Length: 166
Image (cartoon, rainbow, N blue to C red; front, side):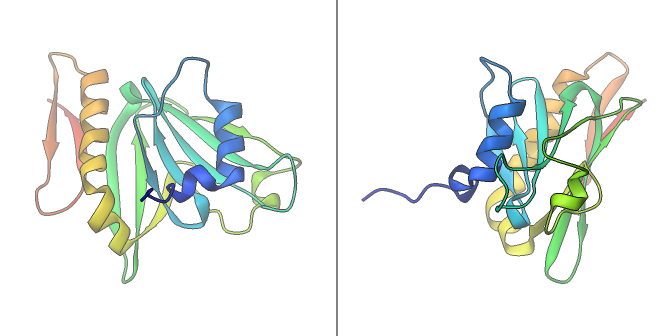
């Protein structure tokens, strides 16, 4: 019996954005899949926040934000009644946003969150599937930005992970 493919792999919009935004030789470590095809893709040295647009237009439109792990200072999960919002906070670095489509990404999208560095995730999905990936993502950011002055602090009462300068 074969396992069904994760839906981000079967979403042509996401695959198209990944093909256009991944460098040759980069590999995917893991994916945190949000609502409406939005996802955080952990690569070797950076992450991509992928926000696909309309499924009608080819080539598929959307917004992809590239953030090097070394520029991540905090990963915050905001809780709502039924879903969560994962937000990647960066240092002085300005994330590289690539609008891949005609016009502005918002004009082609059907349900993109306004923030290019955050994705909405269903509560049950985050709790059952992605909590370990958030910890791993925090560890990747900590290792990439590690200096003698930096250490990692994880608030055990929530899913926030923050890199703090001492």
